[in-house]
Image (cartoon, rainbow, N blue to C red; front, side):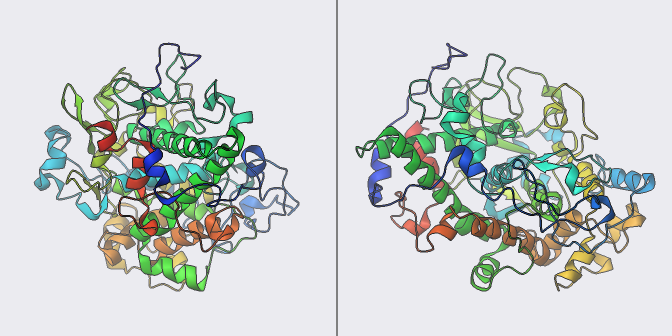
Length: 543
């Protein structure tokens, strides 16, 4: 029970012992990690910042070792100038380019309603489906982003030195966004009567994040309550840990040792999904194999840091994949499916809004994962293609996503505009400049004429984010990233894992998943298996 909310009941969870033990997880399967919690969060800190930028904006850097604590961002292409010199005219052109109803807006016919925008394919002519992805890929990608990067201190649309902002997350796929500082430092995340189990509450029918009396989620990263899908994904990871922890404890070891074992088993299976399922879907298996076999060409730091070209440009490709609406579940709305726009301004401030915004608890506000990942029942839905159009609800973001937390909006509500202005913030090189630096064929002028007609300043100097989206559209049919965007994303992902001494790629190259899979093949472990072990799959729920 939530001590801050006594009426919140813990959901009844079916035993997952049988699916966990299918492959004999136990003492022989893992070794105890050398550090967890606070100690793990200090890895790689206090070392010289060899990746600092020599640009004028960063001229105050001395190269002295940074103080322990949050890490700075770095650059992949240090010697390349910003795509344009910042001034009010450039900002005006970028705002116009990213405006609601503009070139980047898919202009979805929202009046048709959330159901028809999914079921009537004729309404998607300007926002086509990506049949090679399921809808869950978008939100898994958002979850991964929140695990490795959180910009604190940069100024939207104003040139900012790398030294003025910090990354509040560890640059490792270590699930610190879930575990926080561990049971000792982040006591509020764990149960009162078992400090090694995560708190999970009920939203009525099914699980919900633990919340305080004001409805604020008690989690390691508050951004994982921005929308209903990612909040439920965060809950699934809490339950996944609890299931693995219970299984280890059932083998007769102490609670503390069971936690330490789970703290390795859970991240390693999560990392396996990243390398073997997520990355191949978004960049292509051939590129993943090339980097694993031949090494990284551009992301080569001595210490794991997040490059601004990744954080600002390449990894924001997922915004193009977001649908205007989703089927959240099959029977949550008085026995009928619950459909909703991802965001709906008319619903802002409602206790149980009809959209899929986060921060709310109600019986219908749960995710039926058969919509988002393929359980083989024919219910899964696709993503949108990676291109330079974004779903219309993203041009009017809810205040909670872009505010200071005091109800004060920070800049424009258009996500496209915000992404473009961030290129001024960090002085990101143009897409053409980066393509040349990487030895890739640049997009031709004809591929970018529509963009340059609205923003003439961008002729031959396309903001890297926009360039990467158009590259995916032109060179990969919108199914995955092209050569520039794909290599940046893949090299950073695989580089972060290689630089983390506790990742499975770095600690044990022979390791394969040890938890049971629905196919019986360890190498096939994927999100469907993780959700099944967590007990949030359709069969466990009786959906």
